[in-house]
Image 1 (cartoon, rainbow, N blue to C red):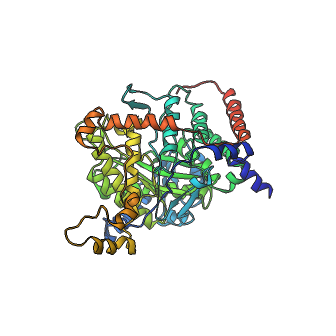
Image 2 (image 1 turned 135 degrees about the vertical axis):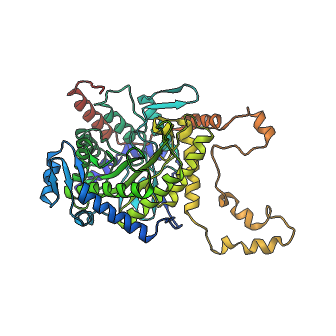
Image 3 (image 1 turned 180 degrees about the vertical axis):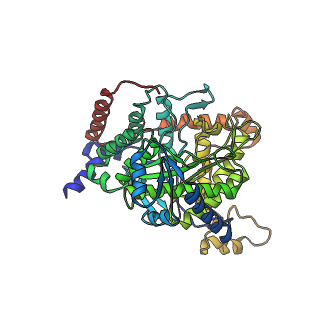
Length: 515
């Protein structure tokens, strides 16, 4: 075995003790990422797409964008032929498209368990949990600030969720840990409590570097250097502004061949125009700048066309979700991403409700389905989102994660083989018969229909006898069951100790900071 191969095996959970623990652990059901066998919904004509693309080039040439407090970025732009005036950067038509050509159309993000690795791009759809809420809501304690214990709970639930492919990133903000140190604890939770792929820190460039360094310990330096082992979220400060913090994190990740989602943060009527065409023009302009910049850092660095889309309630100023306008933008952005030959990130379990109630269900359903049909390749926020992203909820998490199974089944398309045609069943039963007992039903009933792990389909009398539980109560019971059955995935003790030592050494050199 070569040194590099040995390094990879050690870093990816190898070692006799880890392998023995893995063999004795109960097997988890974990679905492979979705590979669509259905067409995307394309709502924009070629004429509309060409108008948007031409208008985006005009915006970039005439209006430009701001790169704030980042003189190195301004120098890079000037060196490739952009017009730089102070912090304003304008781009000759065609410059960004020529730079974007080196970005890959798809890539593999490796997990420490190779069976959990995912492909992002093409016809794939990778589902990841909620990201970023400072609050947690549950049926026992209501709404409160999130803690590290909450974070660990969400990571465990994500690991246990069959239809969820990715552990995510900041599944909630652990406010009981200093701001400048919490990224260590969050990363370690993803690395140790799950073996699914995860996201890195972006709140400061040095924290992105810590993420890279910890991955080199987890995966082995050679493997992490030569493969993509993280995907991270780089938000654009819409409209048309690129701040030094986010761009600094992108610079670290791109230089290290780690993936970035570059995502305009769109609230229609506030950070973008109220019209669909105007918003898509801005989204395309912003994404093109960010993708091109990543390729200036490192040609071939993996990058994802992102679009976080919501509109604004003109009475309250609050963001709204599950709306037809957001769907139109999401579908249109998917078409634009495919024309650039880039992976696409959008949609999620979006809703503005404060509870896992009917509003949350309707808006989430609208948002999840538009993600499937718009060709999204990476769906962040796929489960657990409440209150416009201000709160994460364990109950909402398991309700959403259960519904992600519906997306898997829809994406599989309709089989047309001999078994699916069921001609033998039609012949056996004939007019006036019943299909429950026929041979075809007996052979296929276990897999013929999607089955929920949370919702209640029992008779009314049984439902009453069991306590007349609503969806939240059923979900709370499901959370308790999943956590009681959780078994930590094996991790090489030597790797675990090295991670802990790195964290301790880095934390010891910095005072606590909560801002």
